[in-house]
Length: 126
Image 1: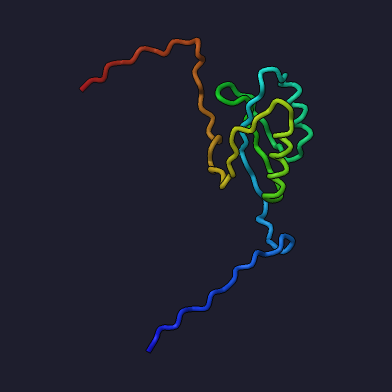
Image 2: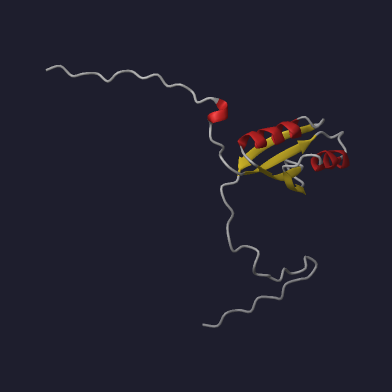
């Protein structure tokens, strides 16, 4: 008795219009500006990109951290293309948001003033 090999099947790609949409997509994009680009110019460009939900101007390796919300991956691609076409900008990294941690920011903690000196520690008694 000889073993039968399975027939080879051809995998055909699904036509683009028939591919299912992945649903809403959120992402975080980190952007670095060229030294000559005024931030006001960049921020004005951000206001023209509908996918930008919030922007944080930060100091460090990057200049801005953006929160993007799009209908699907194609929309995210279009938003990133728009960001890359802003003169003097570099999209350093992009990360898809998988979920948000619940229950944060609900407690209000008192943060000491940086100018105040904390009280001296009391020695523990045994």
